[in-house]
Length: 241
Figure 1: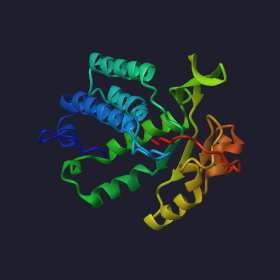
Figure 2 (figure 1 turned 90 degrees about the vertical axis):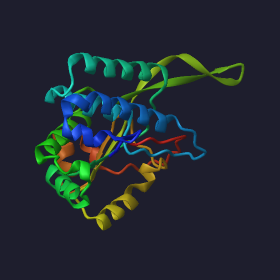
Figure 3 (figure 1 turned 120 degrees about the vertical axis):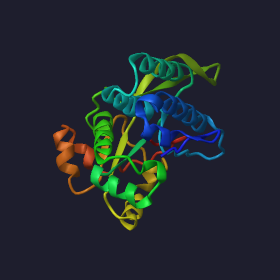
C-alpha cells in the first residue's frame, strides 16, 4: 500500500478520513508514482512492482465510481490521463500476479500491522476492494487485460519498429494468499520461474494455484488454466501487478 507522504501530508490517512474529499488527490498521486516506478531505468531483466497503473484504473477508479467518492468529472479526468498514457507511453505488463486473500484474512492482517491511518478502515471496504479485484482479474468484467505491443519488422536486415501496433492479452497468475508466510514462501519457490520470466504463460492465460484451482478453471471454461506451463522462455522484462 502506498502511504503517499506528500510534503508532510499523509494522503492515505486523509483518504480514509474523508474519501469524498481526498479520493481524487490520492488516486492522482498514486497514478503518478506508479508511472515513475514503471519507467524508472534498471539494468535488470525483470522489474516487479507492487501495483500497476492498470490496477489503479480498473480496480480503484471503478471502486470510487461505485462508492460515489469521486464525481463523474473527476473520474473522467483520471480515465482520460490513463488513456493518454496507455496510448503514448507503453504501459507494459508481461504478467500479473494476483495475491488472492479473503477480505477477512486481509482485515485481520491489517489490524495486526496496526498502521495509524488504517485504524478506521472497516471490513466492508476490504470486501468491496476484493470484489473489484475479482471482477477485474478473474471475471474480467472490463474485458481481457491487454497491453499495447509494438511489432518488429526487418528493414535492410535490421530490426525496426513497425508503426502499427497490436494488443497482447496479459497472463494472470492467481495465488492463494490466505496461507501463512512460510507457505507463501513455498508457493513462490514453486512459481518463481514464472514470476521471474523464465517460464512464459500463454497470452491471456489464467493460472490458478490452490485446492480449488481446477474447479475454478472449469467454471471459467478454461480447463488448461490449472496446469503449470512446461515451456521454457526468456523474456526481456516482467512487470507484475
